[in-house]
Image (cartoon, rainbow, N blue to C red):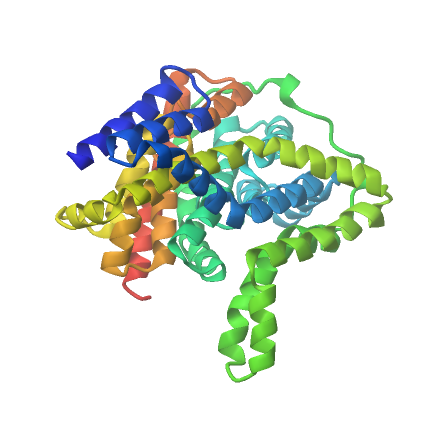
Length: 437
């Protein structure tokens, strides 16, 4: 009966978001209250559970997500992302132009949120298409595959960060494992798969091409690369130091402090404020305006995460989390596969990778405790599943369709297929990695 209630609540959540077109945050609140009523939480304590879930979830994430959005917006508006793209293009040359775009998308996709990265990179794709008269989908899809993989697999993006915190994983180790899985996944879903897409006709709309900044206004290449990748560099260094200097107690304490997600992002943003802001002639008032706009851009993501937190807390407070774990243990699937499958099904219905990942986390958490699965690998498995089966319920589907001026059929053949390949290859990579870690 309990699982039936939970399944009904998930279906209701899907219907409210897709059929009723309700904002996901509102849908989560409504379904959380209904779930609390049917799962036996005393009526006077349901709102307490909802509030606790929101507070506990946002309390550990809001700093990382907001600071990450600020840094991403600064990288985009300062021209640093454009400079990175230009350097990569010059380094690879015309013959390997597709690979240049893939590497560029991967590098830029790490600090930038997906929507920002998409809008930023599409003009570069179109400029290459027009200059070399190449098929737009064939050239552009591999770069967007790289953006998608970083969005689903790698911190500091919202869903991976939220899952790391929820499963008590390690941000740096998840990033390292994520890189191992992400690179072959991008190659298969990007350059290799795109070989089958050369015949898809696409005439990208020129109205979607914003003007580039003049070359003289761009920051230097070293400055652009270091600032954009500083969170990644710091996370990797603080993860490696304990293995390199295991006996340096004082250093390890300092390293542990610096390696915390919020501290990493504060350091990176402070460096970026001077290197890409004040150092490029911007006034502090203008920089703060950029940061304010960045928070507005990701406010809905914060609300979705908060709503998912309330949903999870209702499950926990009702006492069904233990029951779910016990019943899931009887399903003859590896926990990593089960997490991937649940996320994939929710993603297919809801369209949002973030909602799919966070909802799955609440369902799979009890199984994590009982099976002792590596939490960092579960983050990647759920992240891979959350990218599967993108179609008309996914905003990314429509972004790709409209920017590339494609039919729904061709969008399904290209974008939807690419996202599903990413999901399957991601799971395969996680299962392979599980044999060695």
